[in-house]
Image (tube, helix red, strand yellow):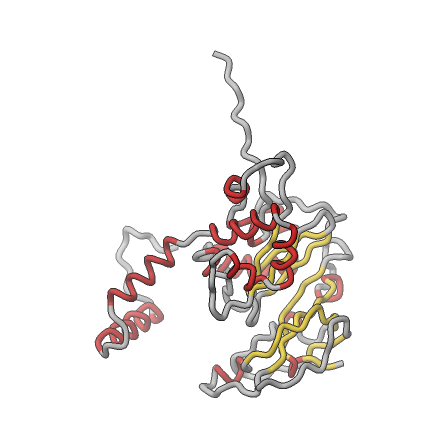
Length: 95
Length: 205
């Protein structure tokens, strides 16, 4: 059984700015940034727990979140329409 | 780079791999033949499966729609059953170009594309393509016009990605097999686009 997704496609979400130790699948470069949920991918065992030899349950909803490149990288060279999409687990995002 | 012709002692991780492998064989958990067989299968696999999916999508709009909705199921439809693979197919259009990276390690749909190229796993590609994709693509020889938005996909967790490139002009009436021949590994990662083979210049004798 997994936790239910609390965000929906189109929701604006912010990635938590946190620095826990361990096996974290949230890249540093995207922490603290705000984007829009592109899709809900389903629920997967939490990799942070799996890395500690635990079962990773309840499974965590996983989202694809879309960020504007200009918001992520200061001085970004390219089109204002350029985006980066990153997979983020639910416990890493907030409204 | 390691020089294949020069002796170098094992690194720590190579030694760990050999030790673990020998232990597994010694304890009868796997056989040496099974390991060699799996390695051979992996090495033989190229991007043909991904290319076949693209060619089918170019010819069959209904298949393309199913592929964009559920990539894993679309792979299964062509007989490429990949248990556990969660495949997302992203479509290139005249207004959008897609490129794939895994910034955290080297996640890649190996069951469909084979072993990833060295550059895909390299730190320069992984760190640069997210922050200056246009420059990196230009280094691959692919200039994306400013009016075309670039979507970079970080394959950083449980999903795997395949780019569905645009069908090149001048391929009307081509067979599925011939179309698949245009789709290279790099097209499926998004650092290239399919191109017709250049005609050899005729030489005057």
